[in-house]
Image (cartoon, rainbow, N blue to C red; front, side):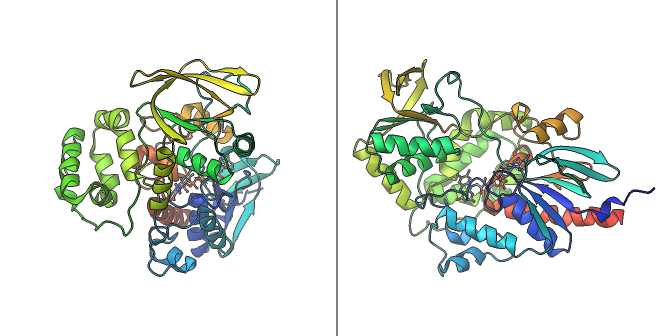
Length: 440
Ligand SMILES: Cc1cc2nc3c(=O)[nH]c(=O)nc-3n(C[C@H](O)[C@H](O)[C@H](O)COP(=O)(O)OP(=O)(O)OC[C@H]3O[C@@H](n4cnc5c(N)ncnc54)[C@H](O)[C@@H]3O)c2cc1C
């Protein structure tokens, strides 16, 4: 008996966040049947946009958040924000994204995790956590960031006192509990996830003291309202290939046009700039420059920046540069020694500590069974830094296999936010269509 040709099967996408939903929508627009698989309970919204907290705002204005590359004001119009200058709630963006999925014809959504995949003829056979086996003409990995590994020294601490995953239900319960108790809080990490956690604590009525700690104590800068005037540059004006020259150039330009305009002007060129840095320079960027780049590039809404400033001024929030020592649980309290960079070492006794140091940095340590299996089979390879998967210029990770979003950071670096991923989703859909036509 002949098996059905692969192109008779749907394209299977793993991951129902922004990357997966928009790739599905672009494929559907090309009349290609799609199965979209996500068993996290966040299908159609993903991690960023499934927050229940109205205080969690988008970190760019509505004018920058259209899901559709060819309709830049699509989201702003959806919000009724004619000027496109508002910082909308992230959960509103989740509803918007859900609507794009609902409007996409021919997408079958399945509430299950993909746990394994094997090459089958010219396509793939994908095994789901509910036991289903689905034959697919192509496989697209849109799995987002991997959850963080346990913070060093947190093993053995009660999970309600040390919360390793800030996106989990345990984190939500921790916020509610310390808000009711009024106990102090420690946040490890001072980036965007710290900001989210502080906002959730304040919204829940927490009145204790919050200490946020990272090695350098750098926090995200705020946007300004109205936005600073853009100062576009052409790619050939930007020094390429050498990090120090690029950094010096950026500092000089920031002094003239302001850091916001200088950093934003690099946005359209970010993939080219990253790809022209030799591997050693890319490593140097990640080791030394990344924290500075992140806080200037990934900024927060002006009202959020003002709220943080006010909390710091009131002594409710302290941002500390330093490291934690050996943490110990004592009843309902966590005792944490802190070695501060300024030498004023201290000890904090807190009702909960949240690990907000960011997602898993080394894909080889992923606990996701599908990724583990694909790596073990040699069907995919890690990128040079093992941040994610090696992909080519078309985001192909293997035979009839594509990856997008944060999994492709090694190739593109700036590929974690909507304005970048929306183009990638469209390009991947076009490439999949081309590939499937070859096989008809
Ligand atoms: C808190 C936060 C706020 C952000 N705010 C903004 C913002 O304001 N503006 C902006 O442009 N960008 C923002 N971003 C960045 C950006 O939009 C997201 O990183 C982007 O949406 C990535 O989407 P994704 O679909 O690739 O990943 P995710 O949203 O992480 O979705 C991946 C999905 O795949 C599922 N999955 C993983 N493995 C499997 C498996 N084996 N089987 C089935 N399902 C699986 C996961 O459970 C998850 O639901 C934010 C990110 C975060 C985390």
